[in-house]
Image (cartoon, rainbow, N blue to C red):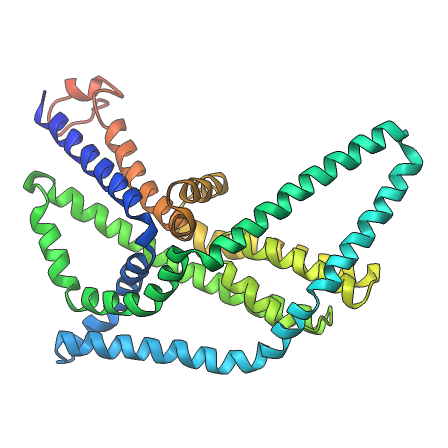
Length: 365
């Protein structure tokens, strides 16, 4: 086997080992993944302070403290604003369930007038069975989220362990990068450095773009649901949509269902329901055609179908952590795949004229 073949096997084996290792420790991965992301985002600020003469450890501590203070201030400011709305939102859940039951009875009454009794009985049995399965699945999911020791451990470790991991990574970021750089095979050093820069630029672009998208969605839905739809919990719902927008499509889907239910229980008119539908239609039009393509899509260069596939693959392989990091991981894989394709197109496997061409000349020369 040629040296190039051995290098290929080496990199493929390394990637496979990394995937298997992550799968083994996925239950405790969340705080460490969060620490890596925060360190990656905050390290430029630490480097800037270091250039101003501040020791690296003190700079890392100062940046981390400033970040945590900022997070606390955001909660201190936002929680009083949305606290009453959250309480109202929770209090309306029984009314929402009752409304859904009434609408289901109304729809079933219409079907009884148009379908034979035998078909109607079969339909009722099917709906009852599937509805029971769905309710049982949701109840099991929430129970596992609330009572699971691993879930509780993840929440506690996210609050306690993630900041500690972030501090040590920020403090030693340049040392870690230098150590990894020193381990790269010398004949592949230039290539690995170039792809690492491309990956870094892609991740920075994704983080900045997704943050702007989340901020816009929180402001847009919070204002429109409060001022135009006049929902009592519009501000809290807008904030929820903005937070859940970290996972593509989840925020808008959850917000749409909740907003429709709130409009129906609060007003009970088609005008309020159509207003909510129009708000979400305009919001999705803006997000899907302008915000996400310009702020995120152009930077990660991923087709929407691949984004959906990445979300499902991440959930299957690594659970909730996989969903959170599916899109940035897919963006990184996209960088590497584009590099591999470019190498393939320049090889003799793709075009045997490449090997026949004189050194320094293309086949057309």
